[in-house]
Length: 218
Image (cartoon, rainbow, N blue to C red; front, side, top):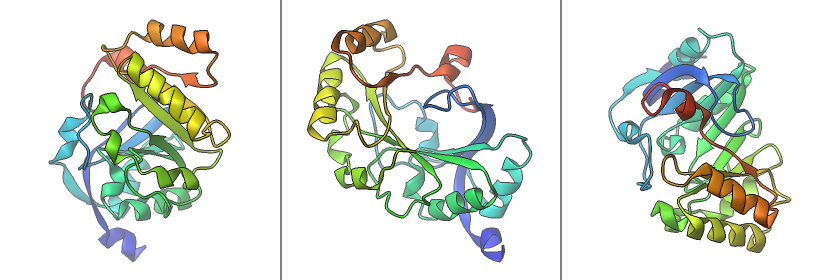
């Protein structure tokens, strides 16, 4: 417990909301957003988390999470794994019997993430501007409890993602999510492509943005 009192993370925000994405969509969830990210995706909606925030011990983070009754916690960013102590936080949350998910860009090594954590890993498309940052070795560390997410800017991104699913044989690994960039790619258009191609993916829209729009704390 002493280590949890002395191990510190830079935190952008901790808030309680509905999960807006993944197979956990709609579930009341505590979000722990870490500060900092080495990527600069063109469609990023959390640029405010690139800097600022406050230093909190892991013990204090756990105390703030415990203010809410839910058992669901999502650790996100920025890129949470950019802070090495994120691994300690993930394990501490699991030890506290939370159902923990990690939202990660897929650019940083996933091999040391606690096996109890559900990893939601992006594969960056060409439209993101950060396709070169994909760490393809991370596919080795995914299990059926994890999810792969493609955020799509346009039809070129869609076709690229289809080819990656085929060439990397992603379907047997874990569920695959397709998400349109908010107010850029029409969700109905993406839905029509998926149905046309009978693609074995789950389409998602960002529920929190439909409810509240963009902004911190949602």
